Length: 318
Image (cartoon, rainbow, N blue to C red; front, side, top):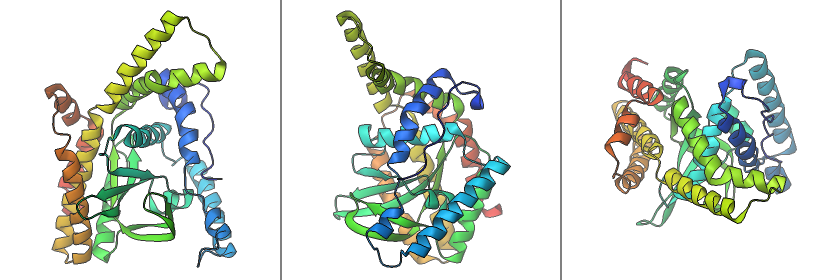
């Protein structure tokens, strides 16, 4: 068993989610969470260092963390979880972050204690090397950005980045189970109306067909053809959605600032790591530069992205 599934949303009152967001959440988030790394596998496979006591302690810490989050109401928003799931889905299905990028869903432990919602693996074809390029923290608001970036600044000053204590990936190395150190920590996100738009598109592209299949709903041949056309159009719009550029630009902006700071505080190993990741992200962005003016305007006015950029501009003062 991986991450524990979130409760099914049964109404639109929670966070004022739209109808499409509620439906998309119920369909995609539980399935997304089933893909999370299962820390029990480390014990089952007798991975050195991952003892029964260690796994038991990790589970206890997870339970305590969940309890504190519930008591304080400080958990991630359902909208952020929805964005994370849709983004992961589209990275894999429609190459949002390039054809050489794959995703890893961390265990709850690494989510809670190392801030990683999603890990990105990128293949450097020229060197025939696979990189664990970044640990991603997905957000749907600007709340907490200064704190998160300040923590990254401190890590760089201390000569370290974030880590995953429980890492495994069939794409990276099917035989490897263990810890991965010095992973660049990146915060990405977008505003509410964009997530609502993505949810609408995802429902048209995939969700409605899933619901009909579960319910056994029969459509007339004409209705089936109309649904196929609508789904095809929605899949195409998702595959080419402007938000992928928005998110990649956020990744690039952070890598530049963090690398410059690592140089400033003379952390060469970290600077080199950030530089190699930046080169890979630049290659991905180069292949996606053809944007409409309207998309550029929408991206530049995204409230979450603007707040992130403003925080990066004030990085020295964090």
